[in-house]
Image (cartoon, rainbow, N blue to C red; front, side, top):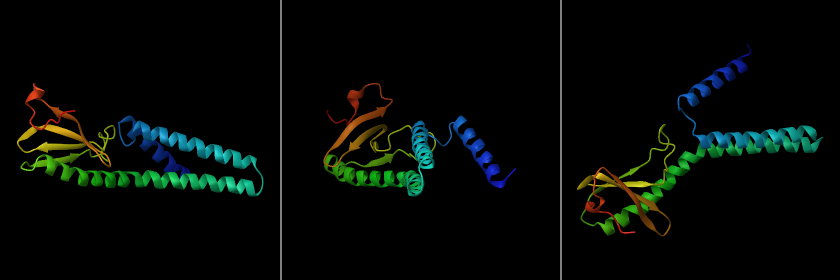
Length: 166
């Protein structure tokens, strides 16, 4: 067996195992791969139908689409991290203004880890020191900050100290 095809078989089996075990890929990522794969395949098929300069242009376009998507797929987690950091920097002054004498811990979704990819990484959790059993979830936009939900095991949500009115 040729070295390249042996690597491809190994890689295919490994991806199959990861997918079956709930591993690396989220359904949206699978759909993205399929769409980009179809687009690149169509570009390659069309370029083989064409002649001369157009064939070369089609192949170059397919390579450019492939490279652009690869860069996007590699850079996206870092982009999400940067956006979350900006949102936290906007949330902290808001919390200091709303609750000047209180202490809190800010939590975010570990979106790069398995088991968390289905969660929205832009929801920012806040746990106040004197109410540790409740996590308040905030949504931060350019000019607005909303407390969108909370999670707790308390039976009565009326007892929540930091619940903001809607």
